[in-house]
Image (cartoon, rainbow, N blue to C red; front, side):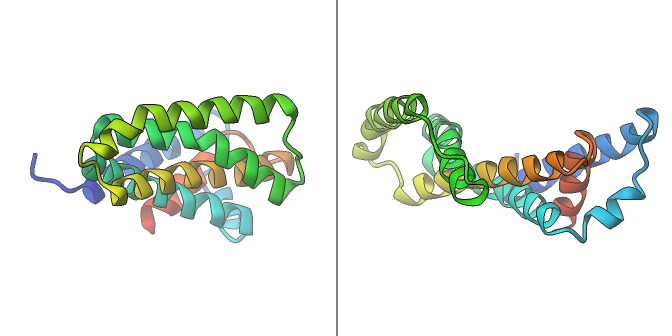
Length: 166
C-alpha cells in the first residue's frame, strides 16, 4: 500500500523479466544470446520504451485516476503505433486505419473530457499519452527485431531484463 507508481512499474518489469529468463531454457533458448542483442539499437529502444512505459503508465494512473489514465494509455497506443510505424518503417496508414483512428480519438476525447473538466490532471493525461507512445515505440522496434530473426521469446525477455536494469 505504501509503494509509489515507480515501485510498482519497476517490480512489474523485473518480475516479468525473471519469468521470461527462467522460461527461456525450458523453451530451447539461452539467455546468453541476450547479451549480444542488448548491443543492437532496436533492443535498446525496446528496453527503454518498456521501462519508460511502466513509469509513465503507473504515474499517469496515479495522477489522472485509473479510468482516465488507462483509457488514454491503452487508447492512444494504436494511434501512436500507426504514426511511428509510418515514420520508422515507412508503413503508410490505410484509409481504414485513418477512419478507425478518427473514431478512437473522438471516443477518447468524449470519454476523457468530463474527467478533465471535473478537475482531472493534464499532467496525468500527458503521462498516459507518454505510456501510449512508449508501447507504440516498443511494438515498432520489436517488429524490426522479429523481422531480423530474433525470436518472439528473446524480444520481451531481453527488453524487460535490460529495461528492469534501467
